[in-house]
Image 1: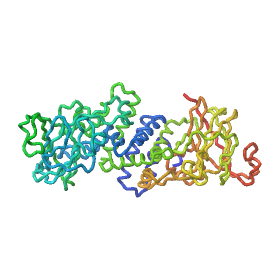
Image 2: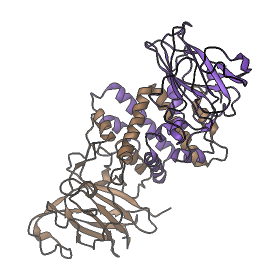
Image 3: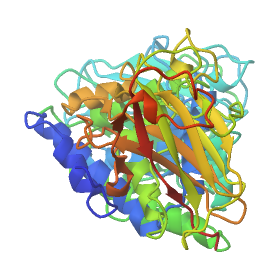
Image 4: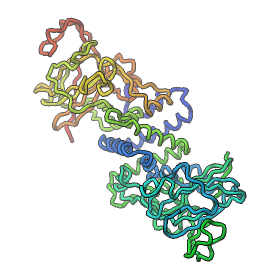
Length: 289
Length: 289
């Protein structure tokens, strides 16, 4: 098109696509560009604002690293990550929630009943539950990848005091589908706000807090993998999670119990002298299509 | 909101904005996030596709540098840069066109009639015109910042053989508003396609070519600055500029002239023995609001 105008540029863009472009690529690029152009037209976006947008992306690029995923964080605080999760959640399965930037591959194996907190102090928590299918049958051999904040509110990758796999563990369940581990109660924390995403939060008068949670990835052969988080029902940020991760069925209750109720068969059995917290949370996976 | 759903997440996002958020910030973030969410919902964007989007941004980040502006290039090939230009073009002024990634600040001054090509060979081009206001009066003291490709199709910043300011020049016009300079005819070229933006072009069956052009930024106190490009009417890529930069009024004609027609008063006057190309292109600026 020799004469591109503000009114025909979206059509010109589509006309540039080759006829044999993959149909899904055509659908995604068509929708993306239509919405980008409509955004610019609706807001009458100025050059200065466009430059601010480019500067935002370049600012994210400048701090992007293996330990700092600013683009994912942007997607998280704009609700995109949660939206994509919800678009593909099965109503029969446990709700999914955002992956976030703190998952680490290759976490060390933890046996049933093992202790994830190692030498860290803080309120002792015993978490247990069953990994099951939509009929309620246990999924033998399911794998539970667990991570959470340390008692200082930091993930291992944010904290020079912790080693790589601190508060990360991988548990494989047996025939009964049961998992159980001890840890310290995770605490609420802020997403990193010292970069361009933090600037956006401040410009919108938003805080960077997330409610405390245990983060799980649950996998089993033949089932759809699930990324999820479980949140205590008394967390102050439950109604205003800055990354939109809270779902009704992911809210649970920490129950206080006396030391004498601590069960047998755990790594810490026999050594508990103080009250502890207990949470039971089952996870339901759907079969792969 | 304790229960975020795929249907209410855009409203939840807006509810997170503080009441005293700057109204323009609210308008821009509201429109941006509505369109991002609608894009995801319309396409039923999958996790894999979301990851591909993040990988695209991280891939741009990985090659972003002072000499490689992949985010601007992405904006260019998606039509955003041209759209923002067109949204703010005045119908009374010369059309604006994309800035692109190759402008360099601090180009050396070139006197009226100066030669920008220095030692480079190729078809000699004499460009001249008047910088004027919307009443047709010359704008004394207007500044013309000129850049173009070298005869090898590369800009200085892409080419180790050229120095920083090769084919970059800054000309200040006198009371008559006239500019004139000699150069070699610019040639068509490809935008960088060895990065993530090139991957997008290939996936869409698009080529990376831009029609040849002279690139100008024209500034004068009291007038709106103009970024523009002028294109020859016989360029093979005029109807399919990969960055959507061509406008009707920016298409001009190179006129072939005999050496004897070369005017007096230019740096090269008296030394021309071969036919040369000539283009006349006036630039109209509008007063600042």
